[in-house]
Image (cartoon, rainbow, N blue to C red; front, side, top):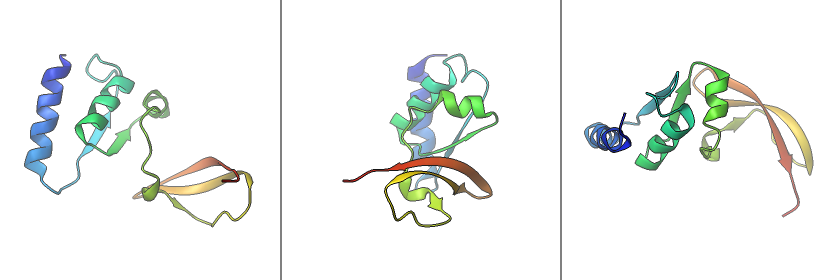
Amino acid sequence: METAAIRYNLDRLLTLAGKTPLWAVLKGNGYGLGVGPMAQLCWEAGIRRFAVTEIAEALAAKKIPVDKRKIVVSEPIKNVGTYTVKCKLGYEVVADLTVEIQEA
């Protein structure tokens, strides 16, 4: 699959969606590109929401920055240190996240 064709389709979908957020559902091999490169292509096009069916797919796409404004931590972190916290990442999506807080 050509990346130019995928990018054209993504741009077209984003235009048609207007203000409605789009989700990129990454699965398998990303139409032959690989999940990581497909996630990067979607991110560069402006898609900021992703879904995967396997944790390995999420790990393959890990170079995509997480919009930290969208992560809800169940309890505030007040001290420097490393913590494992439960985070709400989206509707009915909760994960354990290791967070390291450092002095600024």
